[in-house]
Length: 207
Image (cartoon, rainbow, N blue to C red; front, side):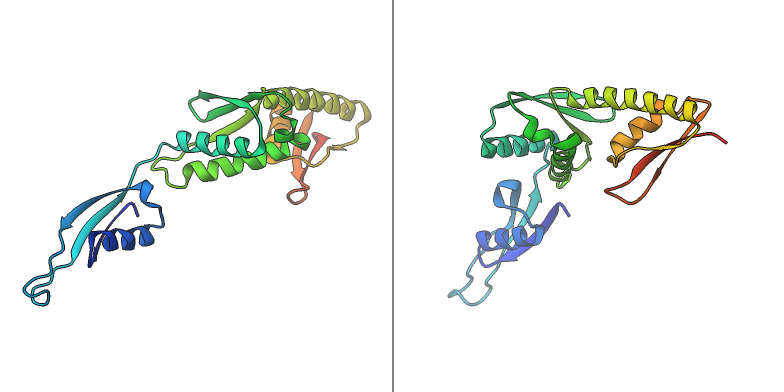
């Protein structure tokens, strides 16, 4: 719901009722007075309520995401610069600054959690959804390169020993990197097993 009409004894009351139904604050809306209130004869006969149409303002999800992140970084006392790179299927927010390891966490777990919250916030009131990828000083590319090298090394071990290998638990994004790194190897098959968040990649010989 992006628009609603409400009536009240005053314009302010009608707007307040609309805000309550829409679940937003007044800075998020525009309103149009459809009917002004009037008290009628002697304040009793012919009394007419105020009627308004309240519409939620269109929001730019990227602006919402940027404001959300800047607020978080401010509360954390971090001095950062956010570089926004728009691509065909997603938008990358690359965060630059000093000592930002706290934003990455172990194997990017903190970064993934922050990315999830950023997407949730940005798309909450957006008319068209966006996919935002958070990165810190190109960490994700470095991690992808590391995982690709790991996949190749483990695949070589499997082919040499003839035994499957099970990697440590990874996020779905990191498992995808492993799958893609080995998808063209004619002797190797990869699959995932286990339940989140402990789901693991298995690298084995094709039978």
